[in-house]
Image 1: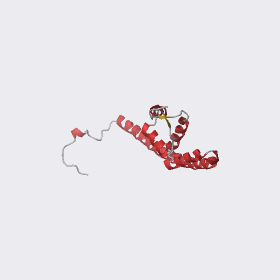
Image 2 (image 1 turned 45 degrees about the vertical axis):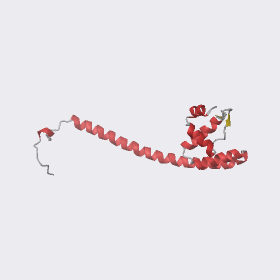
Image 3 (image 1 turned 120 degrees about the vertical axis):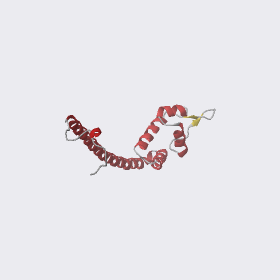
Image 4 (image 1 turned 45 degrees about the horizontal axis):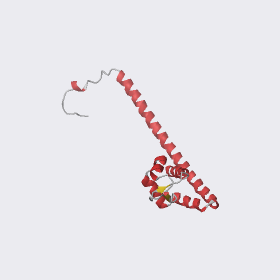
Length: 143
C-alpha cells in the first residue's frame, strides 16, 4: 500500500509516517519500480499500537526502545512486558490525576448551576428597595 493510502487508513500524516520510518519506529518499506514506498498491510496493527502508546504519553525514545526490542525477537518478550508494565502504572497515575481534575471541574460546574438557580429566583422577586439605574440621580459615587 502506498504511503498516501496508509495515511488515510491510519489517520497519520504522510510526514509523520516518513518520520516514523526515518527514526526507526516503522521498518523501511519496500519500494516499487518508481521508488515509492509500498507498505505491507500488516503494518496497520503495529501503527495502531504505536498510536496507543503515543496517546498514553509514552515518549518516542521509549517507543524506539520498545521497537528495537521487538525487532530482536521473542527473547526480548520479558523486557517488553516490563516496559509496558511500567508505562501502564504511569497511565494509571495519569488517569487518577485526571479523575481528580474532573471532580474539581464537576464541583465548579455545579456551583455555577447553583448560582444560576439563585439568580433566577432573585430575578423572579420584585426588588422595591433599589431604583432602576436610569432613575438614579447622576453624580459622584461615594461608598
